[in-house]
Amino acid sequence: MSARVLLVTGAAGFIGANYVRHVRNADPQARIVAYDLLTYAGNLENLAGLTEGDNYRFVKGDIRDAKALDAVFSDEKITHVVNFAAESHVDRSILGPEIFVDVNIRGTQILLEAARRHGVERFLQVSTDEVYGSLGPSGLFTEQTPVAPNSPYSASKAGADHLARAYYHTYNLPTLITRCSNNYGPYQFPEKLIPLMLINCLEGKPLPVYGDGMNVRDWLHVSDHASAIEVVLATGRVGEAYNIGGNNEWPNIEIVKRLAALVDERTGKAPGTSEALITYVTDRPGHDRRYAIDSTKIRDELGWTPTYTFEAGLPETVDWYLENESWWRRIISGEYRDYYAQMYGERERL
Ligand SMILES: NC(=O)c1ccc[n+]([C@@H]2O[C@H](COP(=O)([O-])OP(=O)(O)OC[C@H]3O[C@@H](n4cnc5c(N)ncnc54)[C@H](O)[C@@H]3O)[C@@H](O)[C@H]2O)c1
Image: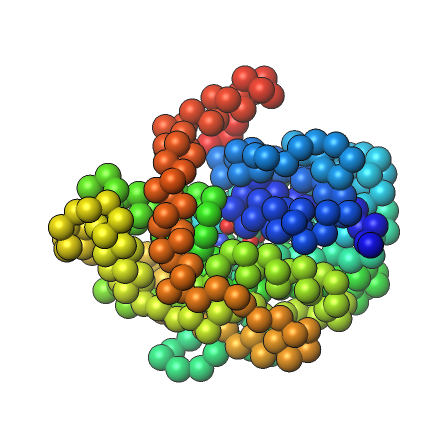
């Protein structure tokens, strides 16, 4: 079996934690070094149940800290890097773009440089379909679509992609890039669309929908994203980018209505109760109208297919949030940050 030693950065975030769990189940022999700065979005509870020992270790660290990275690369003899670490929320990037440039671009470069110094078999940069900009009512993003980001977040992710590509062409570092559509599933931080709407339905709070609600996104279950990353990491061609998507396009307003109906059904509220909470708010500046992914390349070349349908995945996600109320309540109340402050003797950055 494999003797991989994986450095998973951003492992305490939504997708990173789901990926770590996926690898733990699919490849118990792999050693996983989970590396995360534990910002407001990082939560050790997302990794609960993984025990420190022969094949798992958590390191609190910054991808911008070359010294800390050097220590991890040499102590652990890292063979593979999967970089999830990022500032990830578009709205926050509009309010304060600097940290996005610093973490997503400069941080990725520092991590690439560490991987180059120490030599790794593979470096996978986790990116997003948002780097391609916006589509009209038809058409799909392919890997040949020109990169044309519209928000500080997507611009910073595009910058990181270019660096990953350049490290392959300039230094022969075996880098790969994945560009995935919107993810949903367990452990998603409550500021993102699906958990935010779900929790507001449960609490009877307004459901704020940007503009006319007709912005279209392609949605993929986070465990399908995790399996796609594993496939690209194992068998993708170095120097290449791979799109990952679910052929599952929905206008935002439809998602919100579906969630509202599911919450009413699951909690015994009268049909229509939660939908009545929908409130249209002023559109986000630079709000891309439509994203849609052509994932033919990963499907045909590497044989990946998603396993979840939205019909199964969305109700399952609603149930997860219902069953894990204490998880999101602690985040909302800020209790988990106090816990880190105690554990690590410092106050986390907000
Ligand atoms: N959420 C999506 O739908 C989606 C879709 C496509 C791609 N992506 C990409 O996937 C990655 C993960 O997204 P997510 O939704 O899990 O984000 P998230 O915000 O939930 O997690 C990000 C993690 O990175 C950590 N982090 C932030 N700055 C760091 C630093 N300087 N050093 C080390 N760790 C740091 C945070 O503590 C957090 O645990 C991101 O790179 C994002 O751009 C996300």
